Image (cartoon, rainbow, N blue to C red; front, top):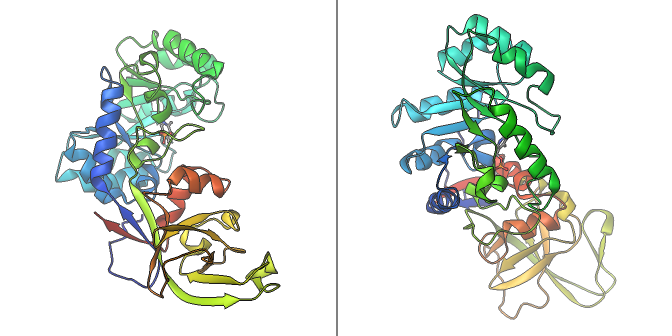
Length: 363
Ligand SMILES: *Cc1c(COP(=O)(O)O)cnc(C)c1O
């Protein structure tokens, strides 16, 4: 699938990825949920940060259980893990389709079954191979409906070793839907007494112990992104998005910047044009709103973000800025949370969007 190698290209943007910070977040989550097994969600190329490097780091922290979305991701992960821990469990959220059952078997992937139909087909083909069951407790997206659960439990050829559900409103710990889903899940899971239980992604993992069950499966928190509607200070930043200045210019009052001329100078203005654009994963919705750190001072984007370029207003910078200087769009001083918010999106979309042209540098 991805497997983008690290490179030494210096002409454009890159993402610095601090693998030790992933390990620190893993340790923090483990402490927050000490009674549960700590699995890791590494779908979508480890949220855009690189499956190979991230999975190796997590396996080195003694993580033995991984979740991905698609079986192809699982097969790639199996190859990565083979040399480290051939017994690691790889669960695939989306479960098997008729055309992917063989891939599940070949790569030794554990499907998450999401319906009676899927469960019956897996039972007929799998010869007792383990499976997980996702029970929908109110998300109405993926997972078996409550009306199907008894029939699934009655499938004697099925080997359900994990039952799980997913919280719809964990971004707000005070939302009453969290408790409703939690209580419903606890009740239904009793129908599978031999299976382990899992309810929580990052949000629930950082809520109280009633949400932890036997296994937590965080994703975004490992990568330094808050799962909540507010930033989460317990998380260490993992990724930093940086790009070089390629040109500088001064414009007079009345002049405009970029496509649509959406920025109009009201005073003499100094601009730095930076090699980063929406083609690298910086959303156009951050136009006029996103900030970057450059030479120790914040600068705001002036005008519309284009495919390969962003223009920063550096009028108030005391330190002179030169071509080749580096601007940081999130990382240490400006949080992933802040930049995502300025783009009207969240940490998940911002990180996974960086998987394309921007390079990766592992620290
Ligand atoms: C993506 C996903 C997770 C991980 O969610 P985070 O909010 O990133 O921790 C857990 N469970 C399911 C079912 C998912 O789809």
